[in-house]
Image (cartoon, rainbow, N blue to C red; front, side, top):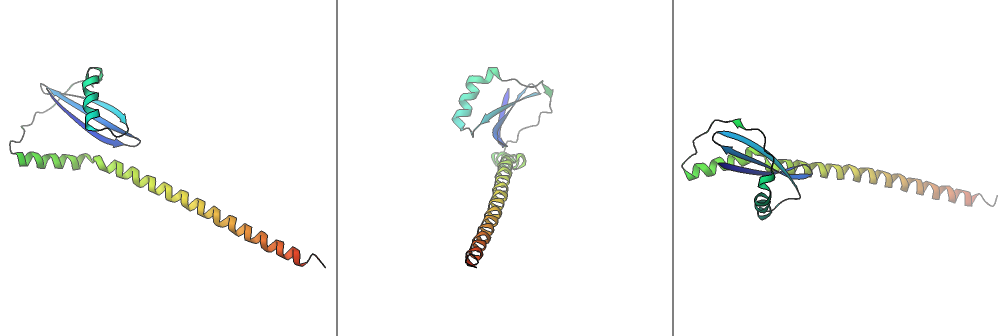
Length: 135
């Protein structure tokens, strides 16, 4: 039996996808962590709650031969990390947060400018009234 756990950020939570292969059959389980988990927390979670995980139905898979060359394994692991895009979702979430902050800043600055214009107009009006008060 083989197992593989992939942890990635899926907009507000960190999610883990646990895949287990047994005799050419694949079953998958999704785990929601919340805050970014550390390796020790993930390991402890799997030890404590592995029996409680609800895996999907088993699906037949084609078993590929593993590369024996360690450099090739490293290259394949790097490619796999790039393909899954673990960091891209978190980067997109950060970008969206920056855009939202930018929009809020624009709205606040616009309101502040309007308030300043109104205040200056009221001051000018008050000065005009004071000038004409005596006549």
